Structures are given as structure tokens and as C-alpha cells.
Length: 373
Ligand SMILES: NC(=O)c1ccc[n+]([C@@H]2O[C@H](COP(=O)([O-])OP(=O)(O)OC[C@H]3O[C@@H](n4cnc5c(N)ncnc54)[C@H](O)[C@@H]3O)[C@@H](O)[C@H]2O)c1
Ligand SMILES: O=C(O)C(=O)C[C@@H](O)[C@H](O)[C@H](O)COP(=O)(O)O
Ligand SMILES: [Zn+2]
Image: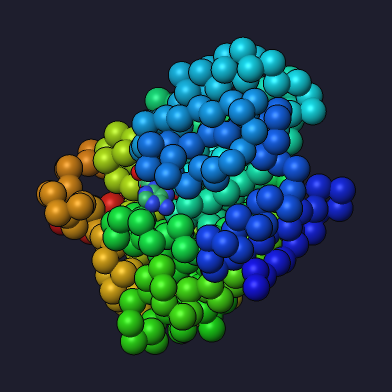
């Protein structure tokens, strides 16, 4: 039987349905009116295989090349043109069938077309199941930075089916694990300990996987409910950005798609842990995150076949050398910057994160240098 939880956002509340088998998944999507005339289904060439059969002919199908470079203006432009050519009106909707790239792009198309139509998420990667399909952040990348153009646009429903992960390549599964580890680090020590204690690494058919996906969705739903549009002066939704000030700079400077988002987040988590240990050493109020905690983070990241530093290979190839000035510059375009000041997410202890301003720039340079050496 499929499981269900709700993202509570008043009139914008929606269910997250978690199915284990494709049969349950088919039943769940057929129980809604989503896959009927007026739908535009956005997918990529790897997720095409999961288009349900027997759907009405009037549905508009729009397929893209897989990869981060698809999350761009040209793709958005194409979706707008094809939805208009298909005469989709305000009763229409957009369905994202794919990973975070397709979800972010399709969601932004839904937020923009006719000033906003309904949107459904069918995440097909681990990363999208635990993170990007939930919470309504949508958008595209521009040369200046990741996700710098976008909108908050909540879906009507999220349909997760863990069996779809059977075909996900191991490198992509590992990338999703970075965001899973992130939730443990920022919000849930028990989840962190569970991940650290697993005897077998997680995989699509691991008995603990569905529960872990559910826990991540619950955490994200709680945080988003409290601060939907990331407007809290401190803490709030920005905590979900743990490791991302570093990660987005890496993705931008290396060129979109060189690092998978989750790989860049993995390095970002290790750097955020180093920063937290440094804040503790410096006597920052409330911080109790020691070197052993930073080492536990590094160990868990490495155990999940993820890079822990800028030196680690990527998909079996040597990583490119990244210019530290460019990384620093990219960080200054982070969306958490206020009045020109960088803000970071750090951990007071494993499972409890906070936002911190006024981190000396020299510390951040040193962290980059250590990671690159
Ligand atoms: N909106 C948010 O809250 C949020 C959260 C986290 C990440 N993101 C964004 O998500 C993106 C990364 O998402 P991603 O890691 O899912 O990448 P992705 O969408 O590029 O998917 C990864 C790869 O796996 C393939 N794939 C997808 N599902 C498959 C399946 N079931 N079987 C076989 N292959 C499959 C895709 O074609 C692609 O090649 C980044 O752009 C990131 O910025 C957004
Ligand atoms: O949902 C959020 O909020 C997050 O920060 C989740 C992140 O994992 C995700 O990568 C998000 O897209 C980053 O947001 P951004 O606002 O820094 O672009
Ligand atoms: Zn992320």
C-alpha cells in the first residue's frame, strides 16, 4: 500500500504519495485528473521510459537532453512555445517526470505560463524524491549563478515510486545521498546515526530506503511550512541550504554539469562541517561541533561514494582545478547574501543548524585552499 504525507501550506497544501511498486504508482497517478487533456508532460531522454501508457492523445509531450545544461532559458522558451502550440489554457497543467533538472525547469514553466497553471511532480531520482520535488522552489541557471532565475510555485501533488530508482545509475544515486545526509546534519541526529550505522549501503531495494525518503520529505515539509519563501531573518528555510553556498560556487565555476549537484553538495557539507568546527574552536555562542563531528561527516560522505574535497575524482575522471578567486566571487552572488554580506549555514551540533553572518572571508579562502590541496 502506498504511504502519504501532506505539506501543510493552507490553501496550497498538497500530498506526497510514496509508492513502492509501479502498480501502486500507476494507481496513484490514475486516481488524479492530472494525466488528461490539457497536460504538458516534461521529461528527459532517460525518464521517457516512465511515461505511463494508455494516456489521452491530446497530452503535449516535451522531451529534453538529460543534464544540468537543460535547466536554462532556451528550454523554458521551448516549453512556452509548445504549450501555446498545444493550446493549453488556464485549466491546463504541467507534469514533471524526471530528476531535479526537469522538476525545477517544468515548475518554473508552470509558474510562468499564462501567469501560472497547476503543476505535478513525479520525481525519478533519489535527489528529486527527497528534496527537489517538495517545497516549491523552481527555476533555471544563468551564467552568473545557479537558480538565479525562478519562482516559488508549489505542486498540486508529488508522486514518488521507489521502484523507478532501479534504473538510476550509481553515480546519480550517490548524488541523491548527499541531500539525504544533509537532512541528518541539519535537523535529525537520529537520521545521521542511522545512515552512519547502515551495514549495507542504501540502494533502490534496500529495506530502509522508503522510510528514509519519507523522513527527508517530512523534514522538508516541516521546514517549508514554517518559512515557505525563505524570508525568516535567521534560520528557517535557509537551513536547507546547508553546504550549498560552497556547492553552487563549485557548480558554477566548474561549468554546469561537470559536478552533479549532489557531488558539489557533498563537498559543501564537508566544508560546512569544517566551518562549524572552526566556529566551535573560536568560541562562537551555542556551537558544540568538534573535530570528531567534522570527521564523522567526512566519513559518511565518503562511505556513500561521494567526493569530500576538490581533489577527488568525478565519475572516475580527475576533477578540474578551480580558481579560488572565482569560487569566492561566485559565492558573493549567493541568494543568501544580504547587504553584500555572505551568510552561511553551520551546525551547532550534528542535527542542529543555524545561519551565521560575519564569517571572516579569510576562513572561507582557507577552507577552499585545504580542499584543493
Ligand atoms: N528545487 C529544489 O528544491 C531543489 C533541491 C535540490 C536540487 N535541486 C536541483 O536539482 C538538480 C539536480 O537534480 P538531479 O540530481 O535529480 O539531476 P537530474 O535531473 O539531472 O537527473 C540526474 C540524471 O539521472 C537521469 N535519470 C533520472 N531519473 C532516472 C531514472 N529513474 N533512471 C535512469 N536515469 C534517470 C537523468 O536523465 C539525468 O541524467 C539541480 O539542478 C539542483 O539545483 C533543486
Ligand atoms: O528547498 C530549499 O530551500 C533548498 O535549499 C534545497 C536545496 O537542496 C536546493 O538545491 C535548492 O534549489 C537551493 O536553493 P537556492 O535558493 O540556493 O537556489
Ligand atoms: Zn540541493
